[in-house]
Length: 96
Length: 154
Image 1 (cartoon, each protein chain N blue to C red):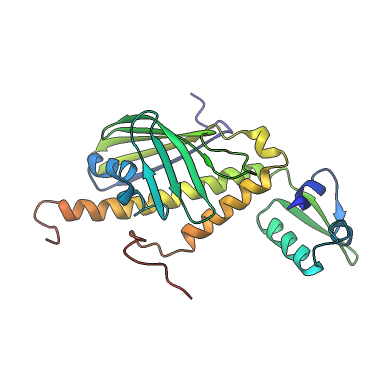
Image 2 (image 1 turned 45 degrees about the vertical axis):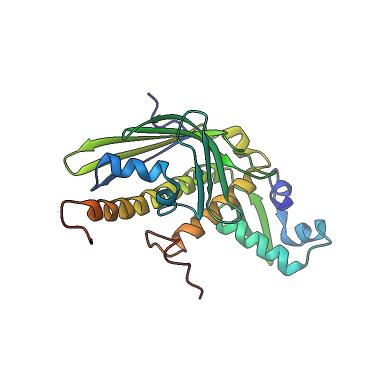
């Protein structure tokens, strides 16, 4: 995950990124880059046959969006669970 | 004031249940895990433990700051782990329950997200944790009771 640190300040081609991590296989680096790109933390630019990567400052806003999704999903499940609970102990319409 | 601060996330919903019913889902572990997490240890009083294991790697940790029965729960919130920008207790979650005709209005305000920290080299840890969280929630069985319904394997 040091990849993100590497590309934070300037753009790097994928080959050079891979070269910085000799202990990691090329496919593994590609996988990491794909995850980072899908997470919106790095952006990819193609130049000829090369792929260049750099960190995206907009990632911050997306972090908040992810957190909002986290709680939104949670509250949606809370709603289901609490309404179910309310029905159970509700006035004579419970399952018991 | 400042509801759109950059360090704050606000989520709201309306639940067709009484505030006391909803309140219990924030304070009783067996009810908490029906909407979030696999395990929870909750000691809902000021200074008490808030510990929710979303899954095996995402461990939410904090401390209750304020607990007013049926209306308000405030706890600090962060993630356990060496590489976490938002360490245990680093941010604050305020939950306000308001009785309305339809049941209960729930307002959740998560504030104290440190912009500077998120921007620095730690942010990938935060991002990945959230990604895992999102996956664990949206990818999991949305059934209300994960304990009663063990996760399905594909």
